[in-house]
Image (tube, rainbow, N blue to C red; front, side, top):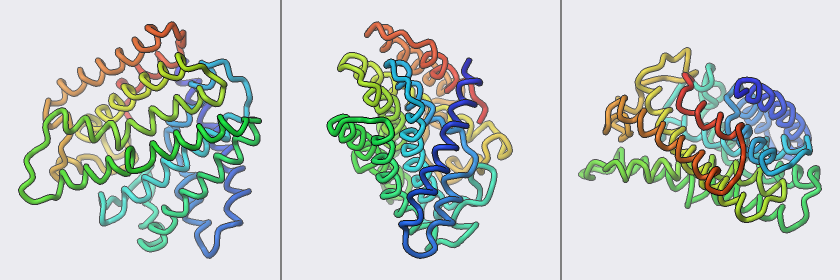
Length: 300
């Protein structure tokens, strides 16, 4: 079930991304369209868009235009990868099996293209809300969920904390709780928002929304822990990026603190708790349950 759903979500999201960029990119000034397309349309798991679709379907949504909303979330995620790979950040040459944006183009264009992808994502959200026929209130709610998750209280703030923890002289090593607090913001916030965005777009009530949010928070943590395990155990061919960089750069991760087996057990515990949140709220979603299991079993 999961493989078929993820394949469908990837295909629908990729088509929606192409449509959105065709409509929005002509508004950009200069030569930014090419690096933005390169960053957004490269191969990827499209896991966050898949969660938008899964949250939407779980809450009873049925419009194919939800793929356009999922595409907006993917643009935000893609922008974060462009900046994450820059020499001043993780300094990586490989992403999704091909040269990173600053290697394919150059550092200035990659930096500016990453910034430009934020208003591109905002335009994509507005476009998707119109296609879905969302009223002004739910449309604003979706926008707020996405950009709060991407901002200082979420993804960007987590990235800053991660950089400080890795580079600040004399800083005490992070505890398990400190690492998980960074993971919850850097990775978990956008993943949690993705599920809730889908539910909001489908008109879900407070109980379903809260269950989707709690599910997403735990799945987001499990996803990052699984990523950190793969960074130590998978090959560059499996990952599509350079493995082992976190350990070489001295970044604190749960596999380094707990060992690979201990980190894997923690990811499995979180995935199980994510599904328990749905059960406690009487939200039946075999799809979300299967996606939680996929997160900790994947090899890329």
